[in-house]
Length: 275
Image (cartoon, rainbow, N blue to C red; front, top):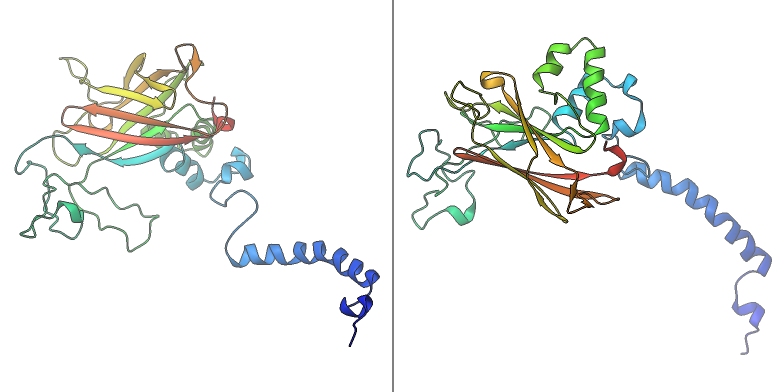
């Protein structure tokens, strides 16, 4: 039996046109439902509150988060460099938190100086348990607009002492990128890596690395005393006449070495939020 062209194609051209016109409306209705169901959003993530509302509307917790746990502020575990069979401040971890490659044939963990960072209360309950002593540093990219807005917001909320404890950089030169390192927990008695004594300043070596190269700080400034002491590094914004960071999203790696420890932090930086 011969089938005509009009019979082989279901519906008239006018019906097809109507269905085609309905498709965009259907997708506009279904897509938001799918993204909501999957926990997705076509807009900025909920955690990026600094993109969604002005600083005057930030809560105390939000302002504090920006200066402590944000794209510009991270708490890093200290990496001890001492090479001893049993460092005086090491802690036994068994093999529960040991890297598989660091377990010898006898089942012993070879990570003698392993230190665990304190458990952040915002993390899941099944995170690594808090071990003591623990030593960690807060490393913050100060040359970011939201960070400085957060410090100002904390003061507006009457948290001047709390803001001071977070060790804001004393100044922000226009031709420098400023990074602050603050000791979060000493971990053991006598560990004061940034304390300035009558004998002089501590021996610290810092670098800032991007895809364009590595630079050393042009200036170093210490603030605070004792275990609340902090150090601020002022890095150049150019290398051999070229900008250290690109015009788009870029990454920078900060490394700090002192007597018996090393800290490494990687930042992903959006130029929209940099000074």
